[in-house]
Length: 235
Image (cartoon, rainbow, N blue to C red; front, side, top):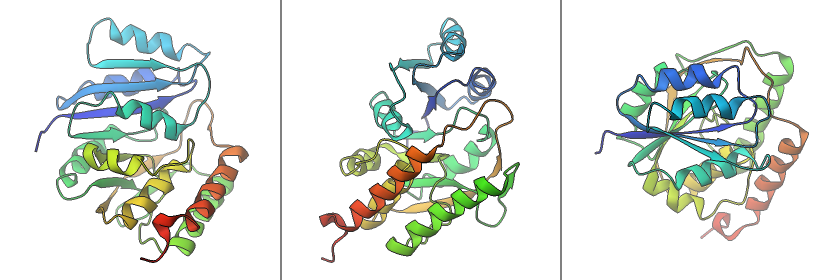
């Protein structure tokens, strides 16, 4: 197994967080590439990223002209990955790089490793009632219709086997938040191994959440479309 890893981070107006995150990731010697897909941030996020590009060749900034969704950011970013495994994480500091080490170790045993907020040893800090409700509802719906045994289907803190990701991405139809659940549904159906690793998730302290009603509706649309797809019909 090649011990080098890449990281993909979608960003949109994360000026207050992205510099700290990049600094922490640059301290991890086996992270060889930090791929940031920015959806036309207007708050100075891109300028901070470019300031890091001046003194390290590990940073790749992909600039997009508008908000195109977190799923499409992962798909685009993966084209720049030249390591056997890559990590996905949010740019708001809710995903602490300290957990990358243990997740990396489990990547030897699974095609997808999830930084889980719902298994023994994990914890969530700073969520209000609404965030808990939406999160638990999304997990409940996916488990109800697809009989998934994954505890945290919506976590974006993951390690992917690149080769497995390339196969799974051929079946993806979502561009936004629904991607997180959709790729796990497909992975289960195709027999790929998924492992959950406990993390401490700290709700963002700066900036605002990008999740909205449009994302929620797309999530439902994608799930029910898969219910009728050939991939999920009894063989």
